Length: 602
Image 1 (tube, one colour):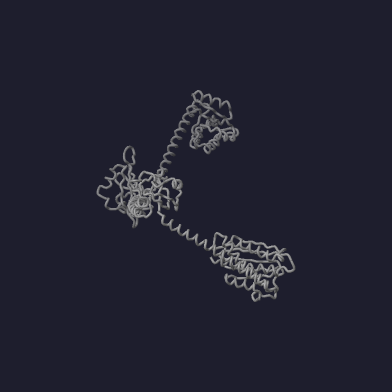
Image 2: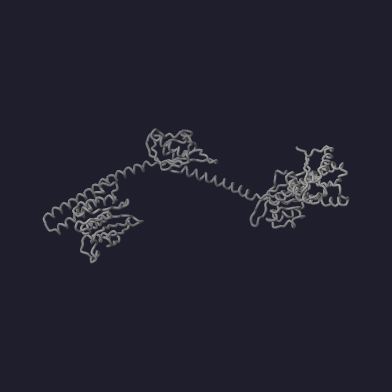
């Protein structure tokens, strides 16, 4: 440790400073010094040099010792301040000592300087040590007081005779008693206000204090209408080797006692649950097996497992499942790996061979079993014999295939019959040359073809109950374009539909409506080989469909009321709209637009 003393000298005469330093060296002191004359220099060195002692002349041309002393007391009050002057009277020196100076030395008697500096530094060190000890004691007391008052436990300090000396804030807050009400009273007197009387025998306190401090006492207390429990600890407070006081700590263990009670009840319930589970497992119609991570049977192989697979429990314990073979082992291992990755699997079909060689179909499920640390310790697997269900499904599928073949054949024959009717009408039309009659025959044939097209699409579809209406509309538009090819060479038809599947009755009605509306466009909207655009849009919004057929042709004359018209086509449209429970709207701006809303029957 560096024992060099730092001395700040306030002196305007360098020779006097040399004399002071010589005297200090003669005393064997190890020091460094700095000399200042002005207040500015003095303040600077106080902050930067931080002297251990200050030697100051009484009076300087631009500064004085009294001001320097006052400044030192503000900046560094613990630094010794010694006046060294040749003009200081005895009365003034005594006054300065009262004001805070450490000592004074006359310049004509510098032989006392070394002794004065040593004594001042020694006293300063002693004062500093004492101050540090007092601060440490104060902090310790403050810390103890803080811990005492803020302790979550109830703390009571008693004298060796059982009288209360102090209580902490927790006691005041929960008991409703103030510190003044408790101090001086016997601890038994206070405890009897809250605790069960049965613990208070004649020598209760003596017996408690005589016990080992590591073995606390439990007491029952009343908390309003509830019963609580406290754990009592005690520790002696020593002073000069004797017990000065005793600190008693009451810890609220009500939650712990309740938790212990709950744990006991939980164990009892767990025992009941285990009994119930055992009964359920033994009565279950499903085979229930618990497996090690490597697939060996651990402990559980319930009676259903014996009945389904034919092996007894003692035959399979600690062994791999006996019904695994080359066919099902790969699927079984996949299920096991999934379960070992914390992924449960269910409804997995697994073909197994029983002990007697019979092949059965099972539905397997597997889930990981976790230990208390959350790690997988095994796998729980269940197997249900679904052989009868598989056989029934196979019969149903065979029956469905037969019915599907029959239904396709019906659609095929309906389509052929409609084509025969169309051919008959075509033959019949050859017996007349009347344009209007021929027109009626042709329009009727188009309507029949639109219905036949539905059955053709259903015959070709995988779904025999619904039709892909987009594909149907494309075929219908191509058919009508082909029929009206003389008028439709300059007519562009655009089709915009989402993925919409309609059941057969709705599809037939919709096909006829599109047939009539599109035919009207080709016949009337673009006279004289005019070019034009026709747009067909079909969309679904929620539970409703919207069909739009619009053209940019000449439009329907204003004197024509489409709701009261002799046109068979529009009459068919209105009739089919009613069958669909829909609404038909007509717009005649920039052409003709029909808008049909109808609900989804599904």
